[in-house]
Length: 528
Image (tube, rainbow, N blue to C red; front, side, top):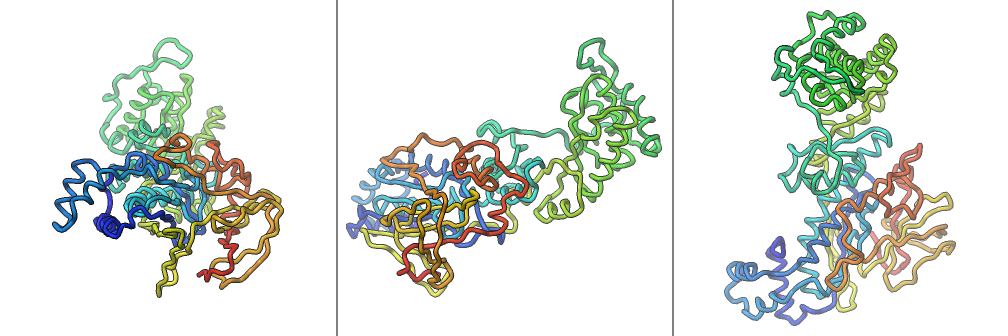
């Protein structure tokens, strides 16, 4: 992957080499300038892939041959010979743990090493981290809106930016708080739970119960197999009477599709209700088949809606389930899961919440994997130090000015265990300690000083790559499941755990209230 870069990185490398500066000690930081989606935070992601890239970084003979063909003919042969020796063995990388909450201007990654190598790594690291962090952040925003109990399913493979984008979306949406994916390959590669049942095409492929094969299903407790189509058909008039629906209006092809699927998956039966008409056909057919399964000792797992007024339909469906449970003495019926899909967005979730929907599962695709409101996180990779001299970018665009010097970042927690500030300090400055009164200068407030005192201090960055090796062992792609917790749990020691988040009743109040500020302990800088 050494050639997965921009050509100007190679031409700059040649310039460094010609000037004899290629081995000068340098440091660069990868960060973003604005929080995405108009929000107050992002999740750092892509670390595992970045570490794999660093471990394998080197130029093959074929790579060198190609570079000879694209660089000017005046490029010295000795430069190509030098590139043959280049790797990341002298590079050190520190980073926030995968899935950590991060804020604008705070480095996600810090890279130290020879100037030429630090420069060559820029484009690839940006590629590996930017989209990953954007998708993880998008997923986290959906999770915050949905709350801790609603199940979130990523189903965006068919809308993703190619197969690589699809796999990345599945992986990083899981890191961001989703529960499962429809992407089978992502399940195999990353161990993400996979789920899925049927689409409209399956239901439309049936026209009558005569097409159902096989027809019989043995009871869950054992015994003589029963003809399920006949059993479901016997339940249909009773359900239609309860729902005040004419049995003649019910689509028999849909009933056949439900029965066929139930015979194949009696413990995982889910009905897709909106192929024809939800209330006059899909719902009566589902209830008839689910009650037939119940008679044989099985429980249907739920229904799915893919069109119409999803919130209103969910409430009507829940009323029907409660009525069926009461009329036919099937208590579990009233808690059958209701899943929805159909271009779900953040605005959709806000509408569902406002309308008091009965939705239990959200299938989200396009608005998750394509990040339509924020097509790029806008990550940048900037030199902050060369030969022990801090580097500062000055520009008429104040937002693009950089903060010089290598920073250390600390998260400060209050007595209740919630973070209230992120503190950036130069790496040579002493680390803050719990209970210490600090004078800080808030970014964007023209040097305004304030005093703060933290009950707990957490260093955000950890060393993950040194001497050509990943240290500690390479984290799994989903090592950052601590992100699920970092959004809602106030406990600092949980940030790197792989446990479920401690959402609590209030979700993630320290994010929602934007309680964190970015600060510097050194007042001499002019901070924008």
